Amino acid sequence: MNNDIEKVLFTKEDIEAATDRLAKQLTKDYRDKNPLIVCVLTGAVLFTVDMIEKMDIMAQLDFIDVSTYFGGTESTGNLKLIHDLNKDVRGRNVLIMEDIVDSGHTLKFLIDLLKERGAKSIKTASMMDKPEGREYDVSVDYYGVRVPNEFLVGYGLDYKGYYRNLPYIGVLKPSVYQED
Ligand code: IMP
Ligand code: MG
Image 1 (cartoon, rainbow, N blue to C red):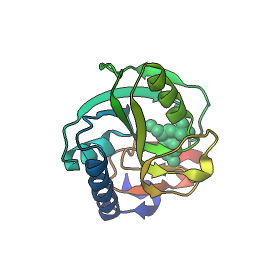
Image 2 (image 1 turned 90 degrees about the vertical axis):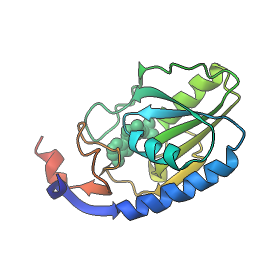
Image 3 (image 1 turned 90 degrees about the horizontal axis):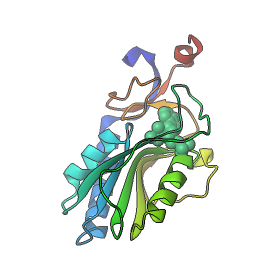
Image 4 (image 1 turned 60 degrees about the vertical axis):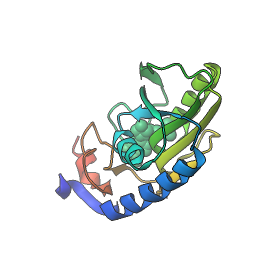
């Protein structure tokens, strides 16, 4: 798996430093707000687990799955709600946790959905922010690191479902996806 990586952009230590910093900030901002943390499957699982472990507050956790990428390196632009929340968001302070915000399409879809369902507040935390990819007007309230406009894998990000379990964030060798 490691042989397929061209370069490492953020090491395990970089990721830890970013999640430490974010968790401290969120602990401060969400104290007494009893947030509902919405983890966007599947990519945000690693980030969410790290964050909730480090956040010293009362919070609940739920999962939602929206897909824009169907296995390749480019978004199709189509969105599908694959798995819905179990909890009611009405009146809740919702904190969406994402792995990466690229075009912003997924985030925009989620924010609109949760607004419509009556959430009291909606904020977003994303491990990675890829601002050059942005096509939709959404704000990432909390981000771990800014990343360049390249196709990345690791720490939750996948290529065809693989590489999510890399403990660092890296760029895949072009030969890996040119072979397919
Ligand atoms: P957006 O809707 O364009 O903002 O894309 C959001 C989703 O696309 C993320 O949650 C990821 O699952 C996926 N994605 C965006 N950029 C990358 C990347 O560089 N590598 C792997 N997945 C990505
Ligand atoms: Mg995602």
